[in-house]
Amino acid sequence: MPLFNKKSPKISNPSPPMTKDPHAMYHDNNNYKNPPIPTAPTIHHDSMSNGGHGESTVTKPQLVFNCQLAHGSPTGFITGFASVKELYQKIAECYDFSMDEILFCTLNSHKVDMSNLLGGQIGLNDFIFAHKKGRPKEVEIVKSEDALGLTITDNGAGYAFIKRIKSGSVIDRIPHIQIGDHIEKLDGINVVGKRHYEVARMLKDIPTGSTFTIRLVEPMKSGFQGIAPRKGTAGSKPGKQGYGSGKETLRFKANGNAAIEDEHDDATQCGIDAINSLLDSFMGINDSELATQIWELGNNKINSMDFAEAIDASDLEAFGFTDDFIIELWGAITDARHGRFKR
Image (cartoon, rainbow, N blue to C red):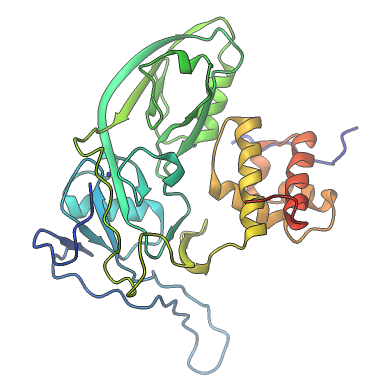
């Protein structure tokens, strides 16, 4: 008998110019104008004027973020979004191209730097760099080992791509495959729109010893790889240097809203990082938002049984986590609670 009474899974980067740059663009609802001065973040909650308990609504935080295309562009000023998809749409409208052209975004670096990948949150002082589609390529691979050595993540808008390649692995021995490459097709099957764990599962299910074809799209390259962002950002406080130094972040929620929240404390961040490492090791995926959701499900639980039940009662049930993996996740949560991780 299994340890837990689990339900069956359901089947269903150039340097940013200063704000005085005459080529800078401000975008909100297709209006181009002089960039506003960023204001303090506010979340409005509307209720019935008669004192009743009316339904609370959350408005989109009207924050202004600097943005550039990673291969080179004027600076755009982006606001009025509450999800990753809406952010991509705003960037695409600002620079007049299709949202489908954006592979992913990095923060404070125009390089294909997965340590600076935009996930479920943006620091209030972060500078956004959007990476567009570049050259497509097809590679034939012999799956000579059970594990290919890939860690896969996605951009939150339908594109899975390679976040990490294990040294000495099958993929590491193929020089044409690089970190940042978007996985578009597997043996002719289009995987656009699938989450990264679905693509990872498809790769894992390919029989060892067989040959398959993978179609990739690499990020657009630029001639500015040696240039780094200038220090300081528009609207930053005097004496404040660099990017991402604020303690508050704009965090994207699963329900489609965004909220301004304080930065995670050390214990929380260590726990989320440890959970993400387990997802990487056990499933070949990397997803800070998923790791955060798992942390939040387990942080207020007192034992592994309650944690397992919380997983089963959430939308994470569809992953079909094994009992052993649940125990590993619970161990990471309790270790972080008791300060056994060091950042």
